[in-house]
Image 1: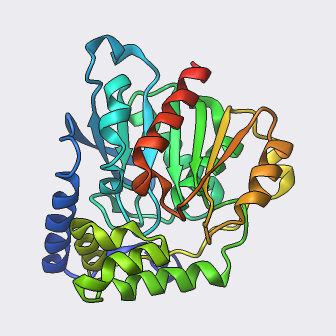
Image 2 (image 1 turned 120 degrees about the vertical axis):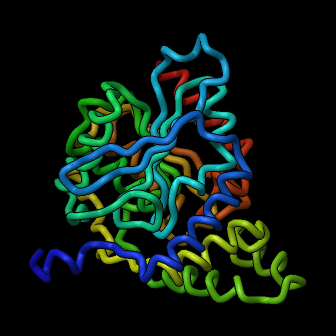
Image 3 (image 1 turned 90 degrees about the vertical axis):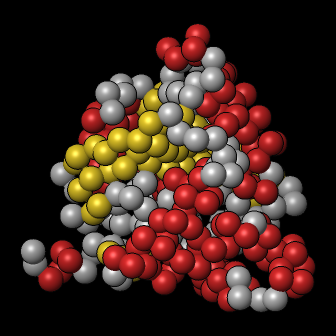
Length: 300
């Protein structure tokens, strides 16, 4: 494989750290419901590992399923506050994105927009899903937004949780990321205060904190930050779209985007969650779960 290609492929440092990381991930998965099944989907770009949840009510098996796409540097475990509520009413699939620390195996780069859209379309096809509600957080939000622009054929709707893809990632976000990482090493007594100051729920959930620290040691992400979609690209989107932003987000300027996106995307719904930053679906899970289900019901 050419060196230019291998530079864009994520990898584990070694097997021992990978297994230690998987153990930490399993502790986070245990905070939520157990998946009904796990499967691997082969694509042009590698093997995508998928977790299948619910529905709790067998009568809901035929409802349009939800597909969850996590943020950068994470995996499907991050959805533990959401999978129980969502899968009570619909089938739910959570994807481990190739190129991030998880159980997927990347063999080719997918950070280019068209390749990212092809990977996600192949994954949905491999799962036999012709129509889905796609939900993405952060970098996963960029993947979802990109899909709505480039390959919307399988999409019933898209939900963006404090997503990438709307603005160029600024220095303030990277400063917050590094500050949050250093805060995971703080004494236990200081973590609640730091969690409130940084809007970082990871610090007060021991299992999440352990997983994040293990992932930083175990895995090397090899991709550039994605470029935001242009206004002309956003104007092409016709898939029903729901944008949910944290009021104190440092990834985007919430008030600017909550006004801008509905102007560019016909019929888009955009809302702000107060008293939260970049992870509204974690630290305000009950509220966000309710809002997402209401939106999905309105589309169906």
